Image (tube, rainbow, N blue to C red):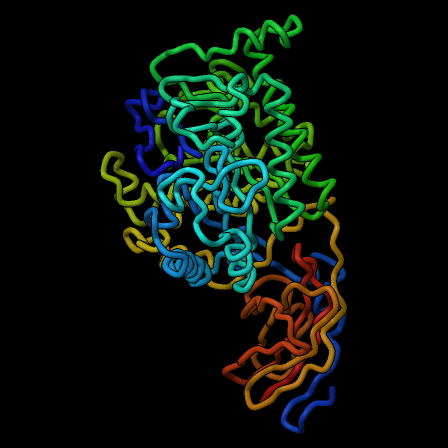
Length: 527
């Protein structure tokens, strides 16, 4: 999928996956010139949907993210061996590009292949930092990566690849303390690369341990997997897990056993994440086709690779079991594409999550914009049209773009169009039922000081939503959607928070917890 060194499967190759395409490791008293008061509860939370009509162009809650791939230095850092200051500057530039486009989340690859972008007690430093596996980069990136995202109001989702052991199958080249060298019995060498055997309970236990450690020690907002489980079909070599199948298969068919291995890991990770920190989200970005209708009547009207059959990835099982908080299928094809039509896949996935409580976000192929092998991608309107189509399906609650490099390049000016037509205002993250959280109290002491709104920090607030309505009366529904939302201001450690207004009108400020639960707003009328 997303490794930056292979093209998207085009029409000629999508029906059967070809060699070398599928190994990626992979947001007090007021002065005389202003008036402050608690906003009417109805203003922040209208009693009925009929009372306040939502404008579909201004969704208040929507996930808007970008993947930041570290493997092979696809997105960050740009190359190995950079000094910490250069690495930090590059990352900040990525985040600022995300904020510029009104995004609110980043998905950062912190474990490309049984390695780490943090000081791990279980796995060595990633080679994509220094160029040498296991070499200490001289600083610990992860705390910085998280803190800088949070400073900008961006959720930080830690992206892990569960079964990738190494990019090469020569284990002797790995650090001596690498798990694959300590436990060579966990490893399956397959077409020049090393994988952990998904059929081994010890492998699943190790993966859960690694992820649980990160959730315990770092302030992440989410744990994320992409589409890599069992290897994608390559040269047709059989995956050498016969011994594990003999020992653990328990009479199942091989394909069913492999799917069950993945399902077990997904369930174990979800449980572990929520046991440690109930508010941390866990989700997966599966390949865009679950199964084709030709193989299963409940499949999609597509003709491409089946994740269920080819890589033993059963996203519908995770949805039904509630093992994940969200799914983010990679729908990397345009509308009308014969093998895999975006316009047919979105309703299929919307139906798959309907009524389950599992959120649906769409993985969007920003990296394909401008490609000339498929005519649709030569048009700047194709990707924005995907978001327009999504509006027809309320189950779709956001989009995530691959990847950060293209976010900076803005191919065909497509991001300008997306911001103009779809992201003209910021958005709060969607609320996932069951993750807890509590709306903070309304901010106190809101006042105007020379064109700057200032208020006292609210206990438990991670950020503040700032709205503006022209005139001196906010009306009945000023915060129903995002048409009046000016900014989501990240909380600082200071006793007071502030926002530069820029113009007169009625301003409303509400407090948000880390999940985006929103409290009542208070208002200030500025001349």
